[in-house]
Amino acid sequence: MFRLLLDKFQWQGTDHIYSLPWMRNRLEYSADPNRVKEYLKGGEFTRSQLTRDMLSRFHLSHNSIVVSDDEHAQFLKRIFHECLPTQERYPEIARKLVDEVFTTGHNRALRLSSSLIPAVYLSLLSNLLGANVLKSLREYIREIDFQPGTRPMHLDGLMYAFGMQLPGFGPMRKIIDLIFFKGDHYTRKIALKLEKMVFEFATPIEGSWYAHLIELKQSGKITRAQFRGELTSILVSSYALSAAMSSMLLCLAARPEYVDKIRHDETMAKHFVNEVLRLFPPFRQFGYEEKGVWEKSGRSKEEVTDFMVSIFGLHRNENVWENPDDFRPQRFATSSSTKGCKFMPFGLGKRSCTGRVYSIRVLVEVLKYVCSEECNLHLTLPEDYEKDYVGLPLGTNGRLVSFPVDDRVYARRESIEKGMAI
Ligand code: HEM
Image (cartoon, rainbow, N blue to C red; front, side, top):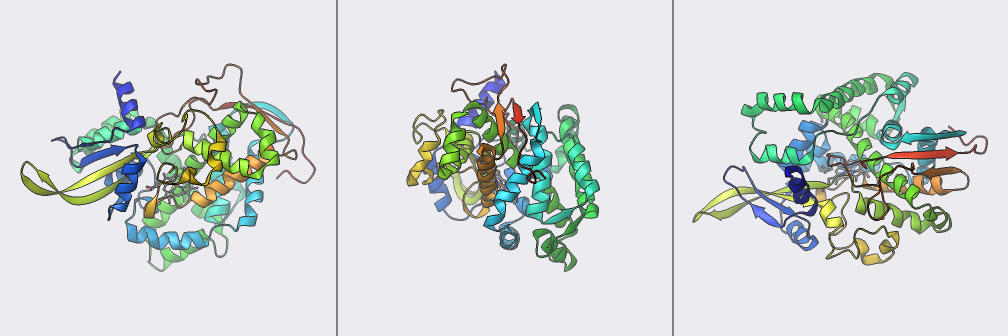
């Protein structure tokens, strides 16, 4: 019951401002695009402490762009964008990724998350970080049992609301973590080990993001901890991209009629990806923070407002989306479909996702390749697959990065032309 209430709160957004006596900050939680627009226009805001706290405590990037201040984030983002692969490279990136996951001559059932996360991680290391990954590291990554994040977001929110992020609660947090979130420790351990291994078993490609990071560290412009933070944040990013890719492939398996449509109309692939990101956004919520002076009991007081956006609620808000629960990629065919803060799987504004362009391009190219004759891949859902009322993969699992609850798929891939496999 309690869980259901929390889910409702988190998924739908409530559009109230909470200012309870025991809460550190005022908290506004919204799934209304007009309110989001108004808020973003309103002036100075930055990534909220709540979001930073969740990211750095739960996940891995203690010192990366994600948790740094605006100025540092802008400085690194500028360099990062210059290192993105050129547009022509994406078909090849996608092809390699698909070939890594779906080997030819196999009929097999697989869990998408466990196959995709290592493949996407390897792909991000080579193509986004820009590293030559040595064989031993490649083999090590292929064998890791990567698990999607384990800590429920709403519990983190509650702990924060009760001030449990404060240092005095450290021991209590540790006890809660040890009892309920053993998986987090496992994820963290993998991250630390991988970060060391990348450093030892991957060499920077000239002009790449990795080469720049090493240079910045050596010249003292970023600290060693920040350098390491960027490496581990690639891991979190690969969770997010894999989650989107899992949902995309499941939606395709559930709707095979789109294979032909995508084969014959390139724009359909883009609409399909948008529709997947609308219905299954890997990050269900994120927040900004605004400092200001508010009246409280007749006195003005400087306070912080956390403004949390429920992306899930926003993307299924029936006031702005027609039949929001239906899977209809065609809705993105009109130019106004993504305008007005109603579609924001990658966030908006100065702290929006750095990997947006890369992720969309890879998703679109993967989808195009998977649907192509040349790839010769047939995806079907297992017969006992649980579907919700519109015949789609069931929901998301409420973690920081949300994967489909059931991500089993049956893949059949006939042999492909010689020379195509990696
Ligand atoms: C489908 C995949 C992905 C989704 C849905 C996604 C979504 C998001 C969202 C919602 C945010 C927060 C935005 C905000 O607060 O306004 C974010 C931030 C960020 N993402 Fe992604 N992301 C994805 C993939 C990636 C990839 C592949 C990278 C690789 C570099 C990446 C790097 C980042 C970084 C560095 C930030 C922090 C930006 C800042 O603090 O200014 N993301 N992402």
